[in-house]
Image 1: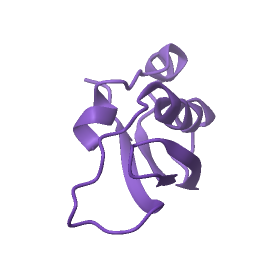
Image 2: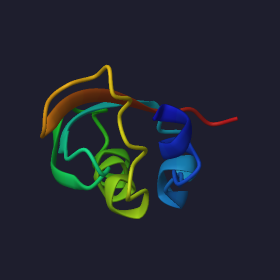
Image 3: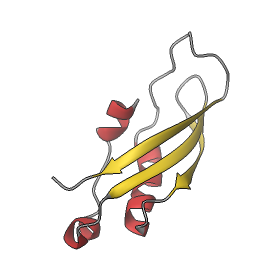
Image 4: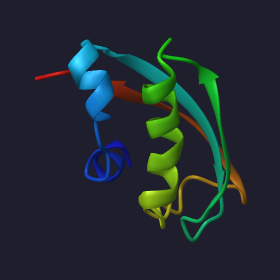
Length: 87
């Protein structure tokens, strides 16, 4: 799932200019078809532009990959780290 999200991730230009890096922890609830039902930040990066991008990423990346059958539950709650590193 992290690989899927990374393919939709954008680095906010103002964050690049200011050298802002960090990790945003997102708690998301999704159904078995990969639709995000809700998402919220459980740990901020400390930079509003990075936090906003992490939440916007959930919308752009839908549908998320469906969970494998061995992961039970519907809906599913997942906590994911979204990393922002300037290369």
